[in-house]
Amino acid sequence: MQSSVYAGSFDPWTYGHQFVLDSALEVFESVHVVSAINPAKQSLLKPEVRARVIAHAIDPFIDWWALDPPFRVGEKVIVTSQEGLVADYAKENNISHLIRGLRSTSDFEAEFNLYFSNQAINPKLQTWAVLCPHHLLHCSSTYVKTVVGKAHVKSVGAKFVAQALMLNWVRVIGQIFDLIEVCSSHRFDIDSSNLNETDLSECLQLLFSALAFRILRISRSVMVKTSKYIDTFLKQNGSRLRDEIKENKYYPQTEINNLWAILANCIEQDAIFPDGIDSGVSYLLSLSKNLGKTSIKLFNEDEVYHAYENLKK
Picture 1 (cartoon, one colour):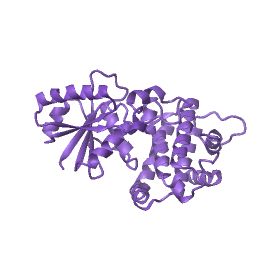
Picture 2 (picture 1 turned 60 degrees about the vertical axis):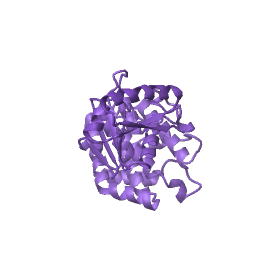
Picture 3 (picture 1 turned 180 degrees about the horizontal axis):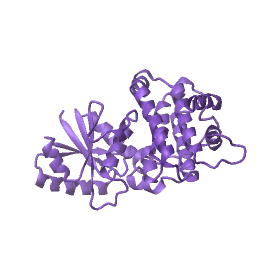
Picture 4 (picture 1 turned 120 degrees about the horizontal axis):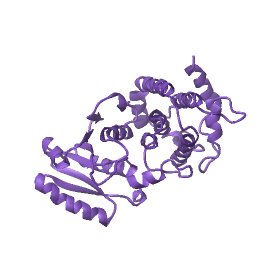
């Protein structure tokens, strides 16, 4: 099958958008994901920032902020931003299939009208609709904007990078959380008594919101230093981890400990610790107690502290 284009405001990119993309990839040889401007919507993030968020959501093992769009993500996805008409983008790139996601009958009515508008511009452009599954019906960009940063919400519906940017917080902290989550995909497979994927996701979400609430500002110098740590981590481990986790169901505990250590080192620079807490490692562990449905620790304190000491050498 030919190429297709999946366009939208994607402000931000949600798990619902990811479902539509994954569905399209089962049918088409390639998909152009285009972050476009919707004049009817007030966007929080600029189109080029949204493009980076999308590329990161698909593959967090590359530092997309060090590259310029368009982004080629794997062999089948191209992510870019567009200020003009999507119908014109499709014509310029010889694409005749437009992907759209539908959650409700009101979505269908809007897409029905959009179809004829696109036909007036590019008669060859045909629309393919992907119906949203029931468990993602609530997961709109509006929902994400409503609940992001709320301390009690266990599932926001967007990657942590998107959340950090929406909160005007530190983007690299979002990167760290996303990397920890994807690297932990097979944690439960390795040890069935450990956190399963849902429990882990909820715990990370609650911890992220707690940190964003308590540490409102991280200095630029600390942010730059942390970004360099993550850039080095991705260059040394990114490609290998992507393949090992996807193909071999690998659980990279050593690398995860290093990510927790980088996070601990970052937040302790500008955090005010309560009595009895003397490091970023112990602070993270204290905040993560009894999160979600389980009392299992997010990490082993001794192992992360050892990684933390190596990081500071």
